[in-house]
Image 1 (cartoon, rainbow, N blue to C red):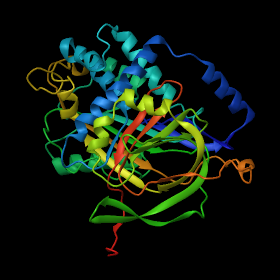
Image 2 (cartoon, rainbow, N blue to C red):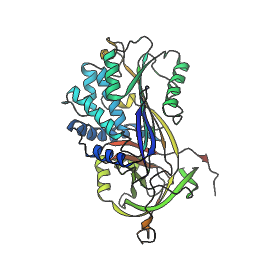
Image 3 (cartoon, rainbow, N blue to C red):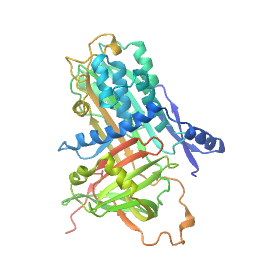
Length: 421
């Protein structure tokens, strides 16, 4: 067990604060108690359905030709949709249930289930990882937020609320970005450069996620290597190296490696899916379904793997408004049809932007590695997992089976390297 665990406190601005601190026997017992606590059937259904949402949303976003890196948290998207249902009436609200495939679920079970799911997966007392989740609903200066809505959206979804003069674009953009910087302790420098449709309501998710490995990388085993973005473009990135026992599968038919790296106290893991060699990710993305991922995971064997993984920070911001409309959320984003009278008491709002922004940091930090396997022969003949070209990843929760993140790394931050040839 690690010598650290994470603790969350709530700040007044709706931030889940995660601070690493020393573990204790009491904390361990608390963790056991929480782990033994069963999720409600509604939370289990919503965990399952949000995992399906992960793949449909990813595929919808991957179709955009100019997008490179993708980074989305399906459980946070689902909870933002819950907030939309809370503020909406009639079909503006019911379409949320359709997108989440829970048409028959009562409103109170939708909100209680999503709230329970988000609390479970971001409960840092039991999860040795850093995840800051900040949610804010911006409304135009003319809006008056109803008290009931403010209380309920804070209680269930940890949303806070702010009025903003979106017609003064520069000031509005600066205000949104400043809030994101502050609420992620400087990790997320920018949500947007511009604000479209200044007359609507706007959801902003600002997050910072840093996995804490079940077994850490050695600080001295880091050097600069080339990451091949394309055949003609390479960037230099710090690369972390370690050899250990991991669940691994080589799909020789599809020429793909799949690696499962446990996080924290093994309540979650990062699954890396990578073609053998540099190639556009379209071929892999055509294979990427929830069922296919489950098949890969079921075929894994625990064996020695020599991993080389980029030590990178990645900041990605997506406007999900159009993508959610493509998945069925058509009324909320339509100025003429939206009914958000639960938010303001009148039909004067629609959902003009849904900014979903995350900073992801892959670093060496983790629990002490198991030294007893050194010299035991278990690390002989390791498989090589050398991440020097674009890949897809998922962060999967073990208890709820929900997907905390799904994304792809196509172009990490780094200086262009000179051609060697």
